[in-house]
Image (cartoon, rainbow, N blue to C red):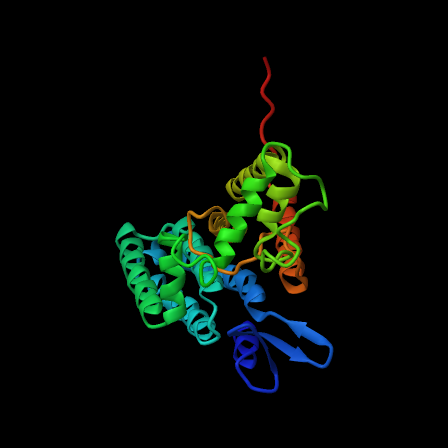
Amino acid sequence: ASLLLLLLALIPGVSGDWSASRSWIHVGGFSLQPVELVKLTLVIFLAAWFEAAGDRGIAVPAAGLLPFLAATGAAALLIVLQPDLGSLMVVAAAALTVYFAAGAPWLHLAGLGGAGGAALWLLVKTAPYRTARLMTFLHPELDPQGIGYHINQAFLAIGSGGWIGLGLGHSRQKYLYLPEVVGDSIFAVAAEELGFVVTLAILALFAVFFWRMIRIAADAPDDFGRLTAAGIAGWIFFQTMFNIGSMVGIMPITGLPLPFVSYGGTALMVLLGAVGVLANISSHAAPRPVRRR
């Protein structure tokens, strides 16, 4: 069903065109971003498949590597056709997290890493705008009024915040200067309005949240719960790192929302559903023995 929705997003008359990407289904007054659903459903599918394969089956290509490539590759191909490289990176990272947690052989993981790096290089080289983004990441000062406008305005927003910020709602960059202020750039706006201290506290909250997801995966009552929790943790962790990293200049801008913070209906709905799955897994965890002194 998720792959079918991705396919529908490519059909003229059904797809909603925003920017250069056809990532939405738009019918009447209803819109949906299918790739957000794929992030969760692919994790659940791979977790169920690898649980059925068992520890020994993972090492056999016919039961481990090939089904992984088939499921992830089908989703990746449709995402590339949109095109949405940022979401592709998150989906691939979440899928690899499940495969790693299932006990994938290191040789398979190394091969996937090399093939993924080569595919990413090919995607960048075959699209001029991706090459321009990469060059802007390496040299943001080269074209501050053109392709480098977004990242330079983000730097101005973050730098203007100082230690304590300009005050909630008092951002200057979000008015006519910084693009996508409620989506991709929300972290830069938060840094400008709330300052370094509160921004550091936000990062600390994310760190606690990531740690709790890891603990839920470790304490899961079965392999399916463990792999599902690990995949969700990988998805949210990498998407958060990609978003914040692009705003502070340590990664190219990818156009990804910041989980739980950026505005968005489909993304927030699916994220809250994923957290519900995590809470359910956690509720069935075996109680830890009480230490007595």
